Structures are given as C-alpha cells and as structure tokens.
Image 1: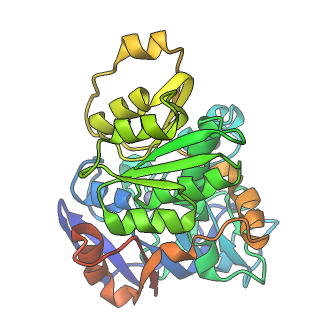
Image 2: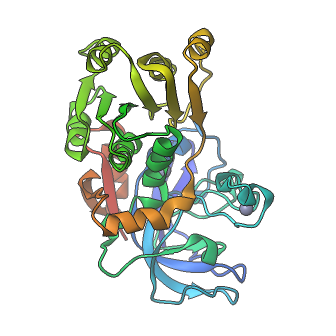
Length: 346
Ligand SMILES: [Zn+2]
Ligand SMILES: [Zn+2]
C-alpha cells in the first residue's frame, strides 16, 4: 500500500509498504478515508520528539473497518469509524487511573518504535489495537471532515478548557491560534465564558479564531499583550489562561495575565526548560494544570458535533490527495500560503 514514510531525520517520502494485518485478536484494520498533517509530525521529522526513523507518519484518521480480530465485538467490516491518536488498552494501571495517554500497552500512531510501534495514518490502511476500546462509530449524518479532528486536536483543546476549570462569564486568554489553540476557542465557547481573548502573531489565524468564537484578538507583535488584557479585564487579570504554544515566554505571560486565583492550563508541547515565576504563582494563589490531552471524550465531542455545538470544518484550508502530501507538508511547515489544517484523502 501507499504510505508516507519517515526515512531519516528531516527526510520523508511516499512509498510502498506492507499493508497492516490483524496481529492480535483485539485488532481492527481500517481503510483510511481521511487523514491530516499535525504539528507533531513536524516535531518527529525534525527530531524534536525523538524517534527511530523507518515508520509511516500520521495519527489522525477517519475510515471504514476493513477487518476485525476474533475478540472484537462492537465493530464489523463496513462500519465508519474514527479513533484516538494514541490508542490505549483501557485495562492497565494507568488506564484504570484515567491516564490513558500513559497506557503501558498502547502508543501513538505513526510515532515510531519509541511510542508503541504503531504504523501511521498517512497511508491507505492502519491497524488499531484494542479496537473495542478505541474505535468510535461515526453517525451517518456526519461527514468525514466534520469528525476528522476529534481524536487529536479537538480532544486536546477540550482537555485544555476542562483543565482551565472554565465557568460561565469567565474571561479566558488563549495563547496560540494554531490548530490546538483554535480548538480550545471552540471548546471554550461550550462553557459560555464572557470573554475569549486570543493571542498570536499570525493575522490569518487570529481572524479564524474570531470566526470560531474569540471575542477579542491580540497581535502579539504589534500590541502590548498584557496591557490589552489588563484593559479588557478592568485590571483584574483574566480568570483563566490556556497555553497552546509551548514557549517559555508564552507560559510566563499566561501566568502573568491571570488574576488572583487564576487557572493556567498548559497544552503546548515544550522542547526546553522554562523559568517558572514561582513567587507570582504562589502569591496569586494560581492553579496550574498541564499534560497530554485526555482522549476519553471522543463520543461526547461527536455528539456535540452532531447537535451543531461544535464545527471545526472551517479549520480545513486545504484538501489534497495522499499522492500530493509532500507538497502539503511544504505548505503546512513553511506557511507559504495561509494554512491551518490540510485534509488528505488516499
Ligand atoms: Zn497531532
Ligand atoms: Zn492501558
């Protein structure tokens, strides 16, 4: 089958690989109908997330069940499904404690042997382990594009908002208008905050954030961000902040921009250590939550897509074939044209 393979650090190409087979009785083989490119793919390609090259990239998928192992009870060939970027067993100690991103038997699709050796979704077929635990059926009235982001960036954005303990009327600052930050804006709206203040450098992404529900946008390269947030919150500071960038400066600003008792929720992926403004965190009685997104909300999120409370289709700025995916990477990484997410069909 056709697949995008990471051959070496910084090097990837479309090639022929073996089609995945049922390896365990709980497995399902999925024929891909839609996938996409994620910022994490770039981190893997460039070694910011360490991995041993020689595997198929991609971890977001929508598809049709092609075959199931003998233990799979809830799915049959022909079912339309999606699933989490990081499949988990549901049984191990970490899963039972609710930390499914740290499943000792699971892994992350398309992230190499270090992450469970699960082949990626930028291909024609994938194998999903523990299919009954991980696969989520797609209601007939929803399109592939409507549910494409549920298993990764939407789950992460929703986790960010839950961790921010957002309440009706709150003022929320979101640092980062990339795909995860924009998903956080959409998820935040579900909790009826008074203000969603979105901060980024990219005017196209900020405008997208406004369309998706941000009440205020701040261009960090042109405005004094903390000053503007101060004005918008009557100098009280925000009630909560979400960091969806992964840089020391945005983390420090997220701490600074919230008021007494504020919550700071971090979902950005950090490649370096951060100097933490400890006295300020202590003296303002702040609460800081962080960590990998919780992938157990998928069914709830799909219900909200069905009821019209969530629509992420505006994030899809490009559509292309798997054959053209290398051009897609070029656009996605270098932003040679305004881009947020690229939907890829086999
Ligand atoms: Zn991702
Ligand atoms: Zn587990």
